[in-house]
Image (cartoon, rainbow, N blue to C red; front, side):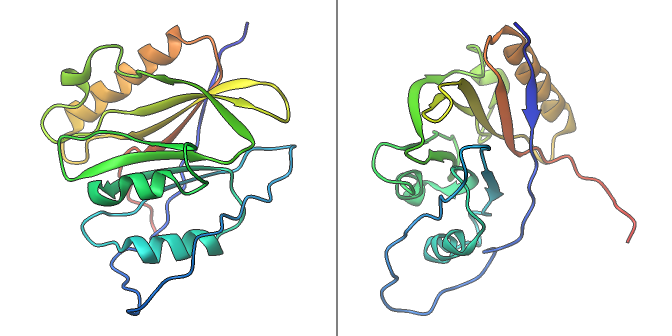
Length: 195
């Protein structure tokens, strides 16, 4: 069997520090009109210190269709609400030693088979202090019958040695898995691109 890891990085600044007008916000109706031919994943660090969950929900509705949502830096107080983006029991919120969490949510196209521990028991080594451990799920696609794993990461920002170790632990975990892996999230690998 061929094993492979697909890594997707989508960077967007939507929602950072944006406030909504006061008053009730319309219910969220996810835009999931993605064809069976492909899986569309939206990965977004919503910057918990400056984001507003109502604004995030409104912006998610206006984005192109997607059927898997991976969020980083979700305020712990709003994590379960965002994990339920596609409906009850179609998402998970990770735990964190800090004030924010990771979230994974999926449309009804997918069935949760199991959660996965991408740290292989190295939680303290992977997520010391306030850092987040990866959030991973084993899903089955109802259109194709194929099983795969989605893992949402938020690697250390200000600690290159820890970030490198976290990446190494993820690679080691992926080697031991027998399913395709889609790895998304905020890898905090800063690059200076000339403009």
